Image (cartoon, rainbow, N blue to C red; front, side, top):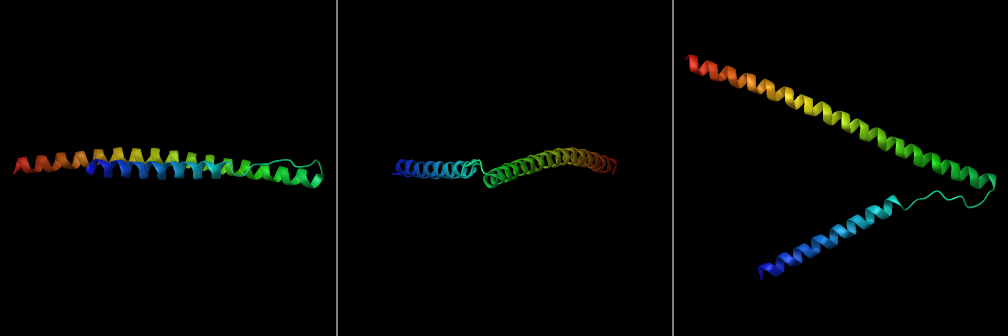
Length: 99
């Protein structure tokens, strides 16, 4: 009874994960820049599409870089706070031992 519930839960979880992965991958490849004709209008549309894709890529890369910098900053801050906490603990320990 319990085993069948666990298998059913795993099956549901697998189905949801597969559906999630499929929808995310479908969204990322849903828009492509395709040159339909050699008219100036179509070339302009194609170039603007490429420009938008490139600007989105640059924006994503910039956000990623900012996130990396923020993580590094937070890790450094974390180390600093751990050191301050250690110093504070030592002071309390010394204070209690001197009483």
